[in-house]
Length: 381
Image 1 (cartoon, one colour):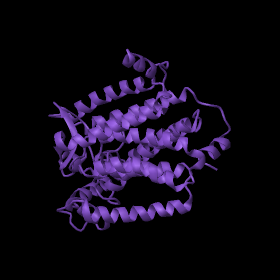
Image 2 (tube, rainbow, N blue to C red):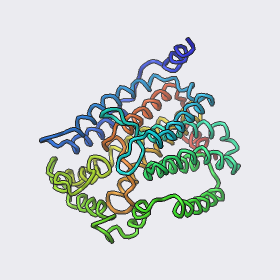
Image 3 (cartoon, rainbow, N blue to C red):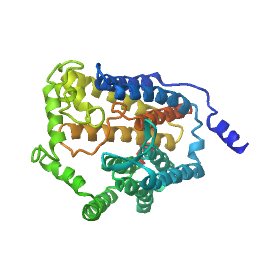
Image 4 (tube, rainbow, N blue to C red):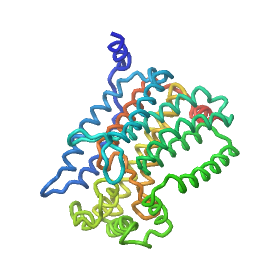
């Protein structure tokens, strides 16, 4: 009976939606589906992603009914965080290995990556933590405590090894610390600690292929037949799209398999080749609208929890988007970070739509306030 009561309490809000948010995200998904559609022969990626899209939209509407006041409870968030940490731990024993990383639970044709869910849980738990300590955020100990929350999943994900997801986890924490009002002195300390931590990871944690990815960042064309091959083919694909692109289905780099993993890691490259500069501008515009809408909802949140959550979701999406774009054009190492809503993968798509659905639920308790007042409160001025 207690479980039934809790479920009823969680999903107690009336159904509603934000059509700008939903339609913008869905359009990005459709661009991804068109890009990964083989048009001829086997089309498993397209079919599975289409099914994942339908499930994700359903999850969006379900999340929009969640009473997010329940998610502000410390015991609820700690329980969710503990469950995700447990799942990340048992991955090392029963997880499915793909492309050298033990990051997935696989059931039949479907796989779930717990790191994706952990990113959302981390946004929620950091929002709660900074909500309780917002007036005293200048105290350095709160950066340390929030860093501990982040360090646990960061290490577990890095050891899988899933370097891209680990980077995203770090960027979520770093971005949320910034918007919470950290001092410049403390920011400098964070940079120094980060540099020391990276040095330690380089010496004792990172595997040779991960080091090669990072070294290729300095000179991606130094080994185009080895560690730099993917980045080299990706830059060719992006550049060959020129202004109007080669046309949907006519991208030679992707369709002829010169560009590996074009449905996942390099879907932006495949898209740019077929749609050209004009298509890229449209895609960037859609992401700009999406982030604008997320921030707009966040700025009228009933409390700082909603505002911090919205900022965390925006940081999550921006981090993945720009890390992937940097990877695609050879400015950043290949890390396996997907383009939000666009790359193939059911687990990240599901979590992204749930994140938006929770934001829509928070919108129902929005407050009217002057923009300058909200900005000052949000930034801790």
